[in-house]
Image 1 (cartoon, rainbow, N blue to C red):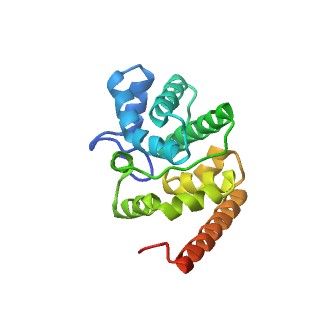
Image 2 (cartoon, rainbow, N blue to C red):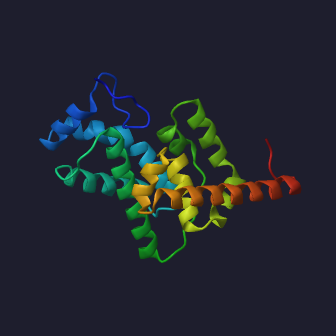
Length: 199
C-alpha cells in the first residue's frame, strides 16, 4: 500500500515508505535520496523561517543525523516525519545558542517558496509568510510560540508531532498555539489600524 503524501514523506509516485525505509537501512543511496527529497524542502524552509545561520547546511546535518539513526528509528511514515523535524528543531536551537542570539525570522524568497510549496492551502500560507507584517509579528512571539507555529505551518506537523518535536505536552502545545495566534491577530489588527497591511 502506498502511503498518502500528506502529512508524511512526499515520495515519488509509486514508492512505498516502508520499502524505502528498509532499503535506506540497508544503505541504498537511492532510498536515502528518496527520503531526503521527500522532506528536505520543508525542513530547509522551517530552518530558514527560524533564522538558521545556514539553512541548507543545517538541513544536510539534519539528514546526516537521521540517516545515522535509522536503525534506532521505529515507527510509521508520520512518525518519521515528526522525528526528522524533532532533529531539525534541536539543531536550530543549538545553532541559535551557538550564535547566542534570539530567533530571527526571515521572509521566504522565491527559491525557498519553490522548495516548500505544496497544495493550494500550503501555497496560500507560504504567501502569507512572505508578508513583512508576518515576519515582524513572528519576531514578537516567544521562542516557544514561534517554534509551535512554524512547525505547524511550515513543517505541516500535527499538534501531536509538534509535541514530540519540542518535548512539551500536547496541552502545552495547544496553549502555545492559541496564545501565538492571538498575538498574531493583535499584531495584524494593529497593522490594519495603521494601514500597513494590504490584502
